[in-house]
Amino acid sequence: MEPLLTKYIREPNCHTLAFYEKTGGYQALKKSLGMEPDAVIAAVKASGLRGRGGAGFPTGMKWQFVDKKSPNPKYICCNADESEPGTFKDHVLMERNPHLLFEGCLIGCHAIGAKVAYIYIRGEFYHVQLVLEAELAKARAAGYVGKNIFGTGFDCEIHIHRGAGAYEAGEETALIESLEGKRAQPRIKPPFPAVEGLWGCPTAVNNVETLCNVPFIIQNGPEWFAAIGPEKNGGPKLFCVSGHVAKPGTFEASMDVTLHDLIYDPKFAGGIRGGNKLKCVIPGGSSVPVLLPHQLDIPASFDGIAKAGSMLGSAGIIVMDETTCMVWAAENLLYFYKHESCGKCTPCREGGDWLHRLLGKIERGEGQMRDLDLLLSVAGNIMGKTLCAFGDAEATPVLSTIAAFRDEYEAHIREGRCTVPAPWRAHSRVMAAH
Image 1: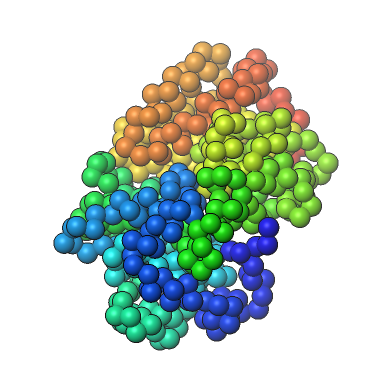
Image 2: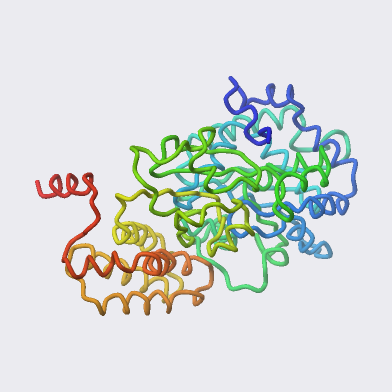
């Protein structure tokens, strides 16, 4: 398919308002303001657009759930935290095509009856904040943001809010808490944000890539959008491919592309680097189960990857070759998760540190066979027992790697060392010793 989201990202000054206007920017907003809000929601529903942040929930349905009868203000919150390891697509869009995001936010506000949108960006994205704020000022001066947009009487403001670098702020209710000036911790649901979100008001929380698709739907029609890719998985999709590949990067394709093609095709990641063999793939950011080489000839879609036993998630495809020790990989991920736990739920707060210590014990050659059962027990007592999906994300690397590579764990314990032949690991240990 011809790129849509990333069509111009390599053009000089593609991030500027002048460039965006030259390529038809803000015409979808103008068209949407001539439509009834319910008609905009109906178009997004008919397109089948699913959230690109991880859960894949239908966007039109999320907007429809926003309580229109409430006398309180309504809000759009754009989740630009992008803190899932292996994921780097949203900052590409914000850095190279910020006005597409602004236009999506404005159309979403019109659809749900909001007059304010907040873009919540990751704390480390300081350079992105500078781009967003500079271009937002231009959009405001040109009349695309603010009062009486296109002379229709529609008023809408956009604010940029930079977080403090908390992974948990990627969860929608924790993001709302952070926007309100509190700790980024998840809320008990219900009530859901569509009824009681930001400052107790009806709120829709959408991912950057999700909102960037909205102008294309309005401009070209829902049928056109739905026809791109498999049924119920329509529209363009950005895939982040990283790890042991020849050409890591962000690639745009429809969701009928296979995981195998994304990894091996020269126009995508170009195969496994160094002539090594593929060992496994994490297809949707670090918090989803691994897939093995024989499972890759499947559509890289929400439904296709779910059938294979994993999740598309944020489409952060992490590729690991035969030199990767899976005990080390799990320990590395658990170091991240135990550090990033917000601490609200006991199973997550205590369990993550426990899992990390057990994995470290095995990786150092000090493990016992009974530690495998303990790992499974601790992880099992985290899964499904926390307020948000963080607990599941934390337990998944352990459960998934033991299920697929238990023999590797057992070899660590029997041999008292890592048995995976990886020259870089030997070198790193020599360096650490000195």
